[in-house]
Length: 110
Image (cartoon, rainbow, N blue to C red; front, side, top):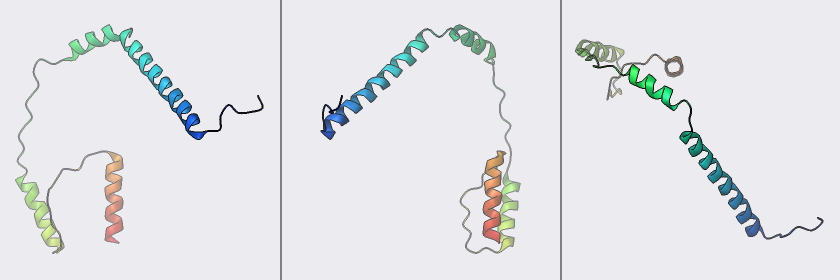
């Protein structure tokens, strides 16, 4: 055990790459096997069949022309001649998104 089998870096690379891909292929087979013998498969099918609604309610049509007019008036009152508004999208409610927007506004206003 004192001497290495090879010192050629290309042979070492080929051995290492072969080991990596054999392990990945083995994991792929294991995942496929788990999908085949999944014991919760029947329970999920019954739950999905019971949860499917018969008819989806139609979304109400909302007229946003007043909101767009208010936003346009606010931009005009701000006096920003360099502003070029391309779209107006409603702000979502995720906390991280709103925090990022507030942080951005505070950094540009100061």
